[in-house]
Image (cartoon, rainbow, N blue to C red; front, side):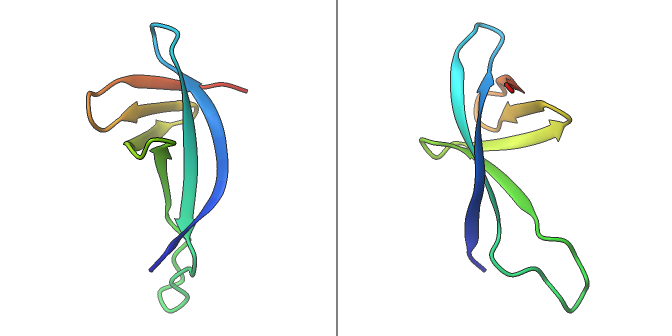
Length: 70
């Protein structure tokens, strides 16, 4: 199943570096099971990002914590 870009935002690490994060969702939700589409996050350069909850994220590789900017 393909993913579709649904949004993008900037997040900052503890040292002040800014990262461009892209949010993707499944192109077709699983209607049979009634499940909601799954969101995944990646940096613009392709590194995977884990959503920790609220405005907090973490780079999968390197374990760098990020805070979403508004």
